[in-house]
Image (tube, rainbow, N blue to C red; front, top):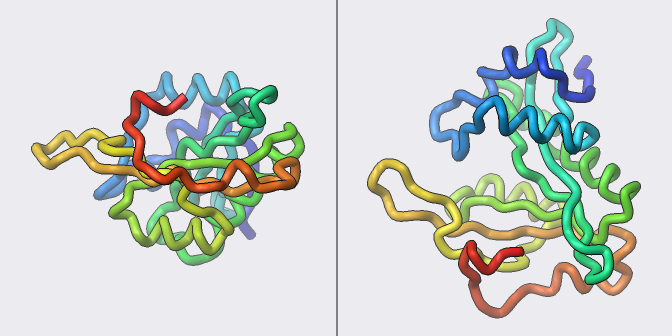
Length: 179
């Protein structure tokens, strides 16, 4: 039986099967994970197999302005080890982050995903997310390839009764235009 539990410092030494895969979009350093764990521990959740192996994790935060109705949950990273995919773990982890964001009074949940990652884009759409805007050259290439665009995808929460937070922007933006 899978256990969903808060991420701990010890997990940093147990999740190579998740983070060190071929084609990993982003590899974060230990200080980055520790920063999230210290500031937003409730947004950092792991899925653990009965034998103690980590199956996946989600890492996020709460950010934005309440006054401008932009207070929201943000998904920084969602990753499931290849051998545990297609079991609904990503959907369950997303649901948990959305519930936390609801309890914190968020208007929406957002995330960034590579435009080329159609498997992820389609999964997020199935979970109720829509493309809010395209961010030009959001992902930096490290191997001589061109930088890649991202979709900023959003899902309105119950506090956004008029769904204003998910009205798509008509034109792409650049990373420096993102607040």
